[in-house]
Amino acid sequence: MLHIARKINPHIIVIGIIVLLSAAALSMTAIIHSQQTPSAPPPDDAPITSELDPPIITPPIVDPPPPEPEEEPIPEAPPAPQPNYYEDRIVYLSVDDGPSFHTARLLDITREHNIPITHFVTATFSNHLHLIRRAHDQGNAICLHSHSHDYALIYSSEEAFFADLALISNIINSQIGYAPTCLRFPGGSSNTVSRRHNQGIMTRLSAAVRERGLKHYDWNCSLGDTDRGATVNSMVANVQACIDRGRSPLHILAHDTNAATVDAISHIIPLLLQNGYQFHAITPNTREIHHRIAN
Image 1 (cartoon, rainbow, N blue to C red):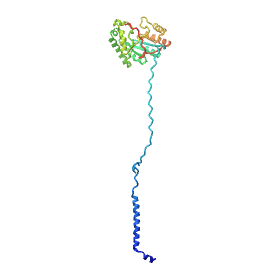
Image 2 (image 1 turned 45 degrees about the vertical axis):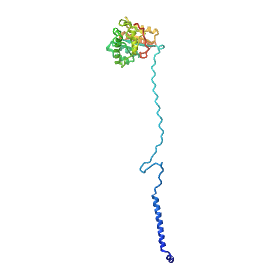
Image 3 (image 1 turned 90 degrees about the vertical axis):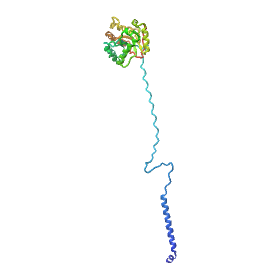
Image 4 (image 1 turned 60 degrees about the vertical axis):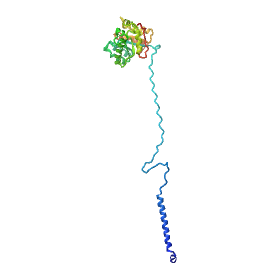
């Protein structure tokens, strides 16, 4: 063994050691280099994230809510049925010249029977004008008649007539909140007393009121309560005669300015109801009734 060792050249041993050390150094360098080399970059469409940023969450696709159904328009209420003038028995009971001392009792009677009537009012009894509102609130119609009921004044000229009418219209408006468009001429459209004050004025006034949007109403049945010697029995008999003639609609003229008329009406209302008549108050849709004009 010693003999073999002595034969190895020491230079060869040194060279071998150097080679081994060099190989080891190269291996270490490769390992370090591989640890420092960055990984491949992400594709272009990959989301950019950071360890400090929260993950990006794509919200789910939700279908939009269906549109709310359109509200159907509320249909207008049908117009109130109008009376059939040829088949129904209709009566319009109207009282002129009030309100007066007797109007409150008349309103009690009509309320007891639950019927409407029509008032053609004046300002003759100024202490009772508040009854216009009560009559209206009770369901009765309020119409124009005259402020003064002075024939000489109102039939002196068209201007005088409409000036007087404006005064009572304003009073009614203050009581019920509007001015009515229904009218009754004092004495009716067929009156002849107007001839004493102005020839032909009723012909002109009947046309003039239409031009102003007013409707005027006469009557086809009267209690006759302004006739000399009129009594409760005679008034009831006059209405019975109208019923016997079968008139419909009945436009009955009365005056709430005397006690006997109110007494008679307390009998006339049941009489008309027993004969199948329906009570109506005049409205803007009520058909007009006219006399033949005599001036």
